[in-house]
Image: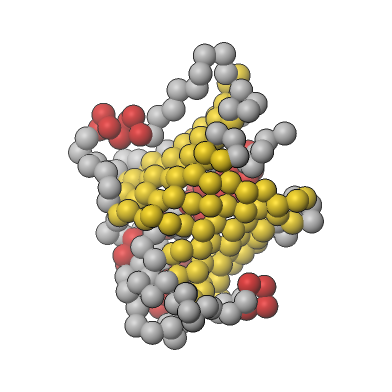
Length: 236
């Protein structure tokens, strides 16, 4: 058994990772969904790379008992590529790397590496945030906070919510809730799939533009993973 991610879980996770971006500061906690979405897009368009640490919990009726994980992530955009790396450190080492065309998923416990293509529906969501080429409402319905599902914004933590619902019926994602702080940093992402599996990702230690994108050798090293000798390679 894969301890935290399977193939589909990794793709869903990647669709979320691109949401971990800075928004520009907004005034107060009365911004409309449209205003929040626009501010996130405007700020994100200026970001070349981002890194962060995370903790994740996944659970639900079908998913069984909650599973937890911790790690770090890094992604960058260059003129011709969208680069992403997601490292799980706990409970079992796992590495997920995507260039927007393929996803490589290494599972140490299984001694396997799966290489698969990103399908069109997932790619649209995956890169709509990162490239900032289109407004969020091109791919999502922008809804008020889903307070029945995840409570009201916490005034002490200075967080408010943006609720997104994918417009593409082919995606596995049912809805996404972003928790945004008063500086418009996304601090929490909650994902629901159509089996009502809930994935919560809490983000910390965010660094904006930590990479020198002119250093191609460093970029290649950061976004390349060579599995240990003897690893089973599965291409799908």
